[in-house]
Amino acid sequence: MLEVANVGVRFGGLVAVDDFSMTVEQGSIHALIGPNGAGKTTLFNSITRIGPRTSGKVYFKGEDITRLPDHRMIHAGIARTFQNLQLFARMTVYENLYAGYAFHFKRPLLSIFAGSHRAFEEEVRKRIANVAARTGIRSALFSTPQNLPYGMQKRVEIARAIISEPEMLLLDEPAAGLTYHETEELDRVIYDLSRKNGITILLVEHDMNMVMKISDRISVMSFGRKISEGSPREVAGDPEVIRVYLGGEESA
Image 1 (tube, rainbow, N blue to C red):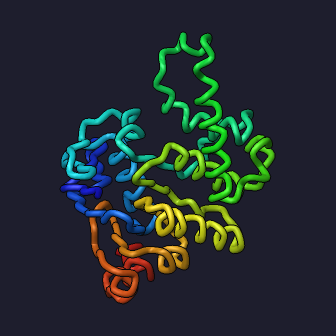
Image 2 (cartoon, helix red, strand yellow):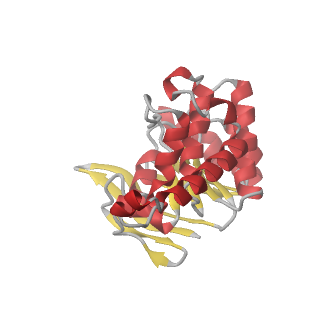
């Protein structure tokens, strides 16, 4: 579904992503892992056009989206979350989710005065109820994110992303800062989005328990390059991956 072909990202003389290629299969959960500073988020940002790309191409469902503007990604069927939460803190959770679906309103703006928005309002209401149930945030719909526990805020951001009805979801460290119990709950949410709702997921994550439990395939980055790729079992047994995670990379 997603093909990253020889992507490179440079900041002056610093090579952040070096000739990176990866294919994410439709319907799968594909994890991207590596030590801090490996280039994972830089690659994420390059794919979604939030950040720069020096070389290479990105294809989605066979279409070249290399130069697609970032605000058009949602129309192509790609949504994402961020390493640092990007919620509207003073809006309710309901309003945050509404914002994630608003681009579906295709009618001329003046049609609002004719009342044609009422059907859309009902459509949004049903969609929000459905997504809130799937992500376990129904009880928080009329609270503001700033008044919610951090784990619930993480789920709100995922809900806002999937309410746009994406075919592919990119999650940047969704378990960061969560307790063990919150991470367990998030495991189930992500797994169900893939298995029950057919959303293809590309996941950047440091929590190896989560990665090994829910991933179909894993790509490993170090210093901007791909050093390993395969099933969780294959990656866990790769001597190069073990060397990097046991500190060999640090001492080098």
